[in-house]
Image (spheres, rainbow, N blue to C red):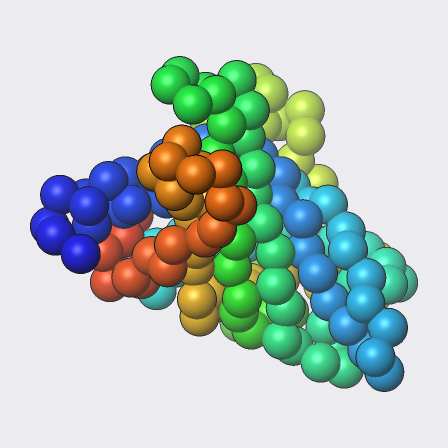
Length: 174
């Protein structure tokens, strides 16, 4: 793969991860798969995807038992081909109390850059502490793939192309 192709894969990945608002998260426990759509923000170096969820949600319970996850971000209405998507695998863990305040701040600032909108949507930190019903989760991405648009245009084969994680930016919306 040449450097321009790396740049193209990197730029497409950055755009999708920074502008996408929702990802489909796949978990499994005891051989039973589950998929949930969650609102997320992308963090770089290493690539991490931050979201929160209720602790009683099935995917939260699955993560507590088995942290390996997979997922996808898909967008339509884009210039050119009209759509694009990224798929990933990774490890997901609940954010511990030591990093909670910073993660809470970062999530809401990146997700809601406008202070007035942020104030409307921000849940109190107590919602995410030990007694609270929610937790923040970080997916550390291990592998990443993009829709192979060139292949689709050539022969209509629905394939993916691996994206080198070291080709991604160190920062997204942080």
